[in-house]
Length: 370
Image (tube, rainbow, N blue to C red; front, top):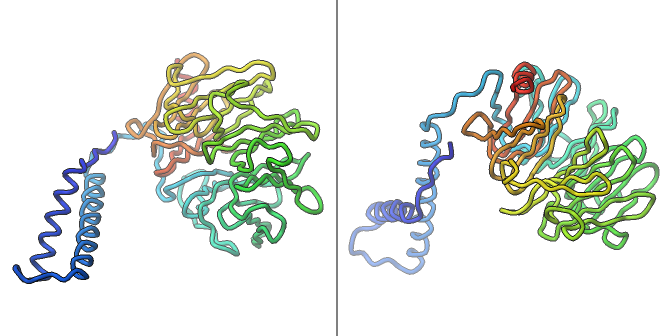
């Protein structure tokens, strides 16, 4: 269940009480307070108020009854924020605000935090070419092979140091999405694409190369949005005028039949759009989605679709019925940013408030439920 929020009026009352106590303890009653001291006193009042409210919220969270987890479900904290997931050997790498956490794949235990040649923070994406593991973060693109780390930046040809998305393809190489363009490395120097070359936007925060060799690039970072498709060296742009539910594109998923799902939306608008190459279909909350904005997409090993939302948890669709998962029935957080099924069949769900790990046995139970 969601934790209750203190009304603003109540917060003000707490702040006022703390402020009065500060006054009584720092100055004698009736003693004039100089303007500089009034300013300092106001700052102290504000900080005390914030601390009291934050402390009360923490105590309430710890004392509030937590829902019992379904059998086979595990909540993992830390890491807290997860934006990207990758299986590396017998471990799971979880990238997010605080860097890259390495977890035991089979037990879900936190093993270590990655230390690279630069601080890893605000990690948005993880990828591997089978030899090098790549980490996209706000200081550049860091890669490791054999334990050695090296970070690439604008000095090496990238359009921006703030990396937003990664995609590796054996056919076309490494693609890197940034806030100032899309970069591709095969051999030689980086090739950079932007609006001048035909992209819908210079901002690229999600990338997918489909089974036909077409590259899809979406902007989910600002309200301009945009979806671009590169085929035979030509870019094509898609918007709400020709099929998308919303111009802001947050996730892209290819189905086994070649059809594509696009998770779209901003704030309270959006949906999941499906494109079969000719026609578009859009799903909304009225159809069963957990929330209007679709933050992430995933297809599990049983061909069940999972739609992560920004504010409202997770929707699971098996082709017959919908199930919604939130913190009220086992999910670690309300915003589902990344999903992964590892080689052992365990399902990993990354949120803003920790990881949910569903064991293979529990996942199989979900998949066989009528």
